Length: 233
Image (cartoon, rainbow, N blue to C red):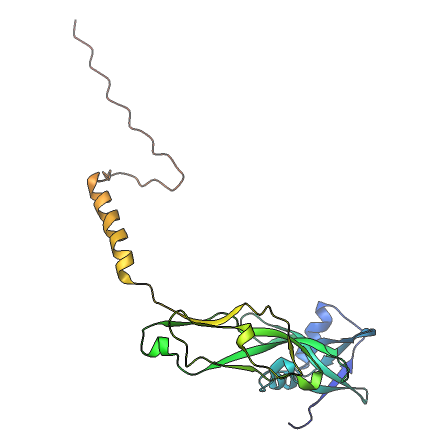
């Protein structure tokens, strides 16, 4: 993969108004930090970061942050998206040492059509979509691939079943289920319950009274009984 270099500007001012002005200029705020290093506020182009996020390795991509002519090897640690338009708003960059291990989350990718789905009418349930691993920055896998084509109904793949390089240590608990095939809920199980409700409902039909509707939580005002007529003297 070609070397990626992202230009960054150092910034001294912080705050919502400053960040808003940065975005008007086509930049987003960010923070550069690392072990035993002071955090440095920076500003970068969101287009370059989005390109990295859309790459095969995504947020685990190693690249250089060029700050005032000095390159820092970093990884995208955190990022913030606008909730409606999903535009990139903020990014945190973690400076790594190539000879020291780091902990990252790697996406799980499944492929194949399970036997339990194809011939048994089951449903594939993708439970765990990423695993936490520890390795050197240059050994981070782009993804963890799982073949589910042999899964029958009731069968599963656990974390311990996933093969990884001997350079990668999986930190996620080995007994956690990653993906399994389950039987669909039978419609017959729902029908008797619905029928029972219908029978119970017809035993004592509710009398709907005409008149002004009563709002939830209110108590309908009882209509007073007519007073008995007094006997004529």
